[in-house]
Image 1 (cartoon, rainbow, N blue to C red):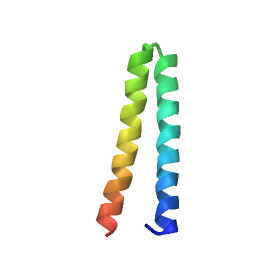
Image 2: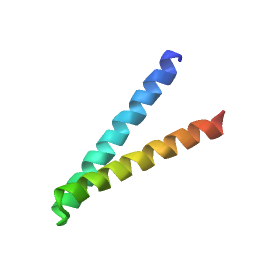
Image 3: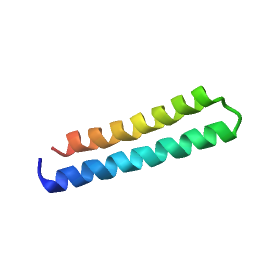
Amino acid sequence: MSPLQILSLLLALSTALNIAFTTGLLAHRSGAGIPQAILAGAGAAATSLGIYFAAVAAYR
Protein backbone atom coordinates (compact mmCIF):
# COMPACT_ATOMS: atom_id res chain seq x y z
CA MET A 1 0.00 0.00 0.00
CA SER A 2 1.18 3.46 -0.77
CA PRO A 3 1.37 6.13 1.91
CA LEU A 4 -1.56 7.95 0.29
CA GLN A 5 -3.75 4.85 0.51
CA ILE A 6 -2.81 4.32 4.16
CA LEU A 7 -3.61 7.94 5.01
CA SER A 8 -6.95 7.81 3.23
CA LEU A 9 -7.84 4.59 5.05
CA LEU A 10 -6.89 6.19 8.38
CA LEU A 11 -9.06 9.19 7.50
CA ALA A 12 -11.99 6.89 6.69
CA LEU A 13 -11.53 5.02 9.98
CA SER A 14 -11.35 8.27 11.92
CA THR A 15 -14.50 9.54 10.24
CA ALA A 16 -16.29 6.26 10.97
CA LEU A 17 -15.26 6.43 14.61
CA ASN A 18 -16.54 9.99 14.92
CA ILE A 19 -19.82 9.03 13.26
CA ALA A 20 -20.19 6.00 15.56
CA PHE A 21 -19.51 8.03 18.69
CA THR A 22 -21.92 10.79 17.67
CA THR A 23 -24.66 8.35 16.69
CA GLY A 24 -24.27 6.37 19.90
CA LEU A 25 -24.35 9.52 22.00
CA LEU A 26 -27.43 10.85 20.21
CA ALA A 27 -29.21 7.50 20.51
CA HIS A 28 -28.46 7.29 24.22
CA ARG A 29 -29.55 10.90 24.82
CA SER A 30 -32.82 10.26 23.00
CA GLY A 31 -33.77 7.47 25.38
CA ALA A 32 -32.21 4.28 24.01
CA GLY A 33 -30.34 2.02 26.39
CA ILE A 34 -26.60 1.54 26.30
CA PRO A 35 -26.70 -1.69 24.22
CA GLN A 36 -29.05 -0.15 21.66
CA ALA A 37 -26.89 2.98 21.45
CA ILE A 38 -23.78 0.88 20.87
CA LEU A 39 -25.55 -1.08 18.13
CA ALA A 40 -26.75 2.13 16.49
CA GLY A 41 -23.22 3.55 16.55
CA ALA A 42 -21.72 0.35 15.19
CA GLY A 43 -24.31 0.26 12.41
CA ALA A 44 -23.57 3.84 11.45
CA ALA A 45 -19.82 3.17 11.42
CA ALA A 46 -20.25 0.04 9.32
CA THR A 47 -22.45 1.93 6.88
CA SER A 48 -19.95 4.75 6.48
CA LEU A 49 -17.07 2.32 5.95
CA GLY A 50 -19.20 0.34 3.50
CA ILE A 51 -19.84 3.49 1.49
CA TYR A 52 -16.12 4.30 1.54
CA PHE A 53 -15.10 0.82 0.35
CA ALA A 54 -17.81 0.84 -2.33
CA ALA A 55 -16.53 4.17 -3.59
CA VAL A 56 -12.96 2.86 -3.68
CA ALA A 57 -14.09 -0.26 -5.54
CA ALA A 58 -16.09 1.79 -8.05
CA TYR A 59 -13.13 4.10 -8.62
CA ARG A 60 -10.79 1.25 -9.58
